[in-house]
Length: 304
Image (spheres, helix red, strand yellow):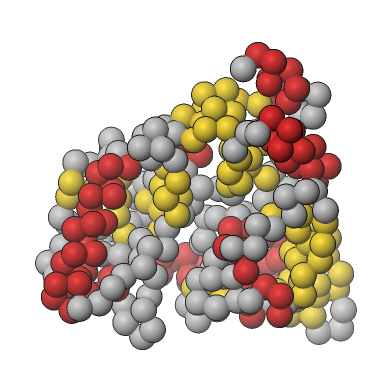
């Protein structure tokens, strides 16, 4: 471990290397065992060097963002957990629109605020989504009728050999809560978005309106990972869970939210095992009552 740490220090600052790092500190669920190495990466060149080191040392690695739709098991994660902290951005304003290019480590909330300060409309509905831009692109995040596919122009990514390539909108293969990045083994570095020029006060008012709606409908007062299941066509899985009488149902400190049954909350000391057992109950009940197979929206990683 000491030898590996020395090799890592030749690539990134010592302060960006964490050994045996509890992943509960890096997930919105506040759940998860330790990562052998948790690495903050601030430059594409660093990422390339880390990928090369992982290949040389036969080290497994996992790319993470803000951990807002992530459930990490108690066994933790072997090898490198790489957090991309790429946050630089540029804005090119034109007559009625603007192009904003941003590092994929920026959170959507930060990016929405930057857009509002520059009188740019198009991210208002995304303002309350706590994940990173990279995570939002990967899962084609959306809210209140808007999705990332509506504003993406292109993305710059890195393959596992460290080669950088640019993908146009079509190559993203966006669909409901999916994109090509779920399977193509490309790592998002930055994305270019097309936004419209607007009035700052109007943009800020819309952001506040969406924020208020989220506070009313979602259990933001508890650690959670957002919607547990994807919508199935026009079927709201949360509504089916509610009709199964599961609101408030708990296993350990993992509980189906009484405010929104599409969410599981951590009431204090929930484990991944608690959450997964609760998910299993939800899946079974929905299948038994409605003959509907559900699909996870959260990502589950780590060893048991």
